[in-house]
Image (cartoon, rainbow, N blue to C red):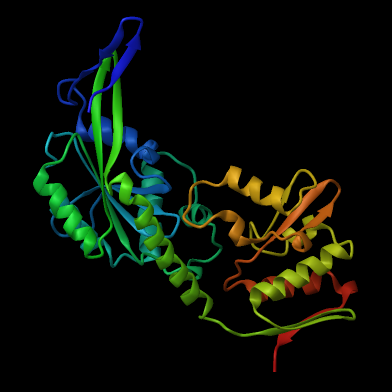
Length: 348
């Protein structure tokens, strides 16, 4: 397929070129640019390592290693050649070798990557913030290893192999990058050719089902229920999320300062919007700020009308994602608001 410029006389074809003809190098140019803007070929991904190697074979290096918002590892292989070579076999080998990587090992590799690139961040905090988690135990890390292949083009043999592998449970994406020369500028047409657009919705539904199953497995790890009392107000047999909701909502509805609550609990468990919003508006605001994860951010918070809290022209929303720090956070709230006589205990 070609790209055309429209002018008064009709369509003017834009010349296609190659990366090699334009002096664009695979590692020095393409890889360098993509690691800074990986959404071009792999949306919703954060790069955690470059030229990754932890094996005896010094030649075995993953071009770019990433993680997506569902905590899946993403192996990204780049080629500037016309046919893509045997990159699918190489990427599969890398994916198999990387599948045993632990979260702590990834943190170490990411910290090295940050230092090498002069980025002053704490790797662990940065990863957890990207994943919107407070503890790696809240998610089954690296349940899947995804593969992204980016090349000038792909042979029929390669695409046939990828389609066959995807049918058998692998998750491989092929992204074609065609450069064009136009008025002295180098343009790149980026298209995902596998999965084909017509099949993308189906594949998304399958992945969403897997995610729902993973969320269900996560929720079944700790099925302890709790009874909560705030003065005379009592709630019984609540899971952690319900317990924390009623404690926080009870504090706020009794005039407790939101800032004081925020200081007692993990980050992002109580967030605010700078105006009074109803339930629909809160969900719309989440949608506007959503960064493309498979799970809408609004589903991670109590967003119904009677679950919101309004104070001083602000709207406060409570998270429904509570992990290993839940009991500590609840204890902090009890200690910080003794005048409210908050109690919680396991249901007997």
